Image 1 (cartoon, rainbow, N blue to C red):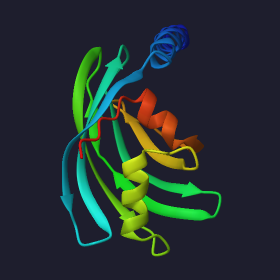
Image 2: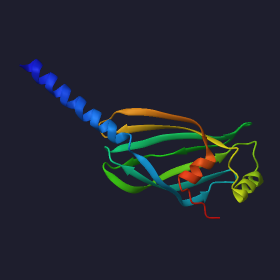
Image 3: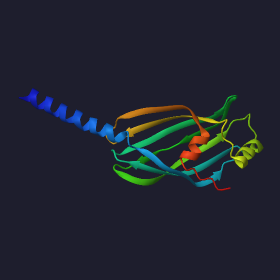
Image 4: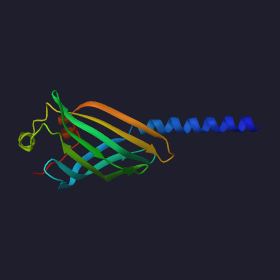
Length: 161
């Protein structure tokens, strides 16, 4: 009898996990805007991003965000971020703390000219983040060579200068 109960619980758990996985595929970022920027020396800034998230699934936490902005010649800047907890079954805006530091090979004037023209076609982003569910399951997500122009355009990243 105990064996039947354990099998039943396992089947019910698999059904819940399968239905949760379907909802996980529907999680999406709906907006991304800069909430605040604070210079941290001449080569880095601390910022808070307002990130809108549509989450039809369970509560999860995004932490240990690490990324690089690069072109064909190499890394231009690196960034870190998190943590932020996204509540289950919500459409909400969350503040994500992050820091960005310019690589030594790029000057501040080069960055200002890129920002002025907003020509981001030559730049890409690599990012890694840990996502931990409320149940304690952690998965590392890695994305490489995301066009920076697409992120700014599709993420509705508002930059006020």
